[in-house]
Length: 239
Image (tube, one colour):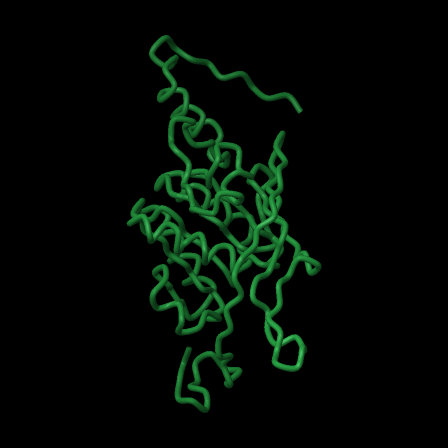
């Protein structure tokens, strides 16, 4: 399919003018962030190395279609940012995160998917967070385009844990490496609990592919005892 050539005047030869012209000519396109923008380093060295610039890209959607290990890795990434004094936010579309997250990133628990998407757009556009994570939502193509534009405006890092993605976005995939798990042993030699888990995470994009193995500590937590997220469970807790 032929693409019409762009007509530029001498005043439109600088990069900023060309970017504005591209936005006007191709309103559905998502421009890549400036290469001068430093990536967001999560503190997970092996994880950061699988991205083209050595960290989460600013102003660009990163999609994680498979949820294997995503919550554990992204929670560790958020804590790494918080320890350096940076801000992180997590939009929990399914209200699935427990109360133990109170000391972690800012957690938003909208009551429905439309509010979750709106919350993510506001946070992304604000530019006040180094990393924003969206889970529990399957945005359609138009919603993904809006989110991509918002993160481009705010210039933070954005990861959407969803099976839907855009063609040009960076995609993450992951799988557990069961043979590398470390288990604690009980007094009678039986396996008592998982101490650390190992998983392989790969990042792919047009012209890019890299993977790394991560080892993370395992943490147990109390599960909810009520199926309805709006009802308190038998402990009297909503989380």
